[in-house]
Length: 92
Image 1 (cartoon, rainbow, N blue to C red):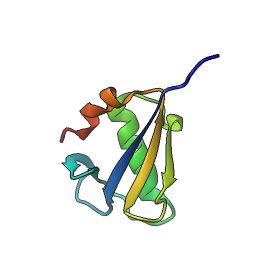
Image 2: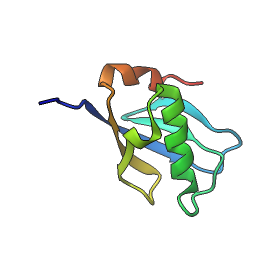
Image 3: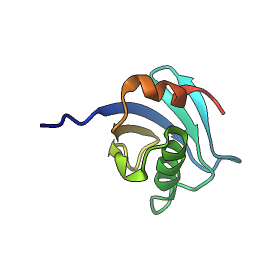
């Protein structure tokens, strides 16, 4: 029986920014700016893509488990441990 690693992170998403970037930690959140507008899930797609690239994990391993229509989101990352996510919290 294989135990899959799952990590949950809280994200504060800022849509319609001039550039897409992981800003860094803000309290309990990881602040992320995306260029896309919060329309039709575009900002969420860009968020997942940005985190996927930063952590070198497939987009399919990232799930928004709460806050799909909110700026405050809870993400579940499969196949990566909390310690490995520390790099995500560092600003671009």
